[in-house]
Image 1 (cartoon, one colour):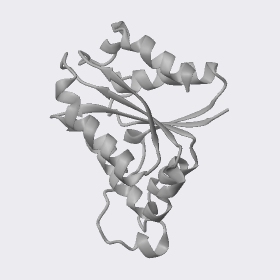
Image 2 (cartoon, helix red, strand yellow; image 1 turned 180 degrees about the vertical axis):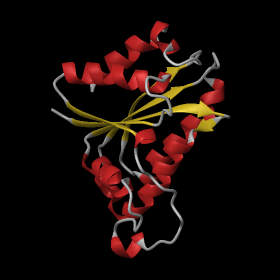
Image 3 (cartoon, helix red, strand yellow; image 1 turned 120 degrees about the vertical axis):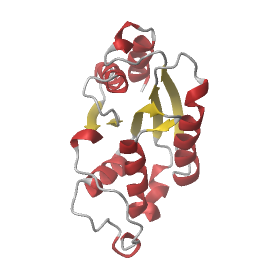
Image 4 (spheres, helix red, strand yellow; image 1 turned 90 degrees about the horizontal axis):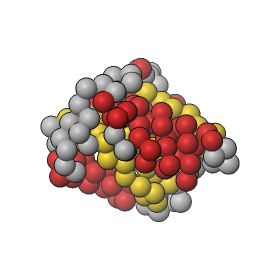
Length: 181
């Protein structure tokens, strides 16, 4: 049994990336894994201010939920990072979380072997507009979480209105990814 942390950056509960997270979770739970989902839009998560007090304290000085979320990331065996694409990049919720992980930079060696799935949704039909988002997420994993393992990318293309992803074949792909976790 794996501890899987699903991080949904969707601003809309039931939005397309959030819906794909739920399908992944359904599969992962059927496979017997312990799964927790965090919806960043529902969390109190401030922006990194670049004060670097965290480098001495090994935690962020902000009094919000950032330290708790980053701690859960460090404890997980597998992590799903899910974001809609806004103007060729991940949305602000996901970027804010990534910036806040700097507070535990010295512990990133713990990610060796941590499995990642990336869920990216967009209204566009093509994967092309998702390229910069994918590369930013991969850069975070590759350059910051040395030894992490990318298990897969789930592309929710052609999904604009909340819930429109439910009619697309990617729903099955998300479910099967969860089963294979």
